[in-house]
Image: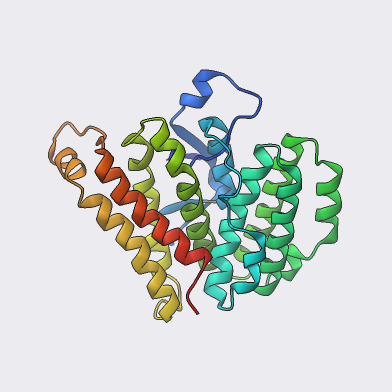
Length: 282
């Protein structure tokens, strides 16, 4: 069985390096295997793996922009487990962003950062494997092989979390991946004049992400509450936009087309969210 998650331009960051065909770039849905999804016990929300975004990234044809990812040097800033998990997701997105754009050396540094943070949140058995780096180095010039390796790492991570009843940690990781992805896609989306469809489908994932974070057993943790508040702020800003409210009132729902001012307002909240994740206050 498969689930289809709408994943279009705002979060699908990756450039299709080989050009691809136009039909693939225009494709609005990403089909993800059920095994790649995290769902609550009552099936009220579904989240893909962080790295499952990569297939959507590649189809969107968005422009790679150097210097916009979270610097690897930031990994030492994350003292709280929540921040380590969030940035494990951020770096997962950055790894895919670099790998699919043939930035293999940069991707290697993100793999090392992921190994470091993964080990610090109790997943040493997944991320301390030295063979991962060796395998990565052997395939630096093969974009497809690197992509497969990234999926392999994520599968190992998912299996560990499943076996140890820690799936709620995957929700935190996905939250970081989502925030980084939509942040990286903002500039390109605006440049292409896509001020509505590139964001609207992401709100479904945003709602599910908030639901998942609220199911965390440490939901009263001060930092987690702060992060949830930032995600909710993005959603409430979106839902409060006049273009969105007007579209929601239409019985024949049409995708809202945001005005430039509305887009900038929402982009500001997304940037605020992402910056709080990668540079948490002490």
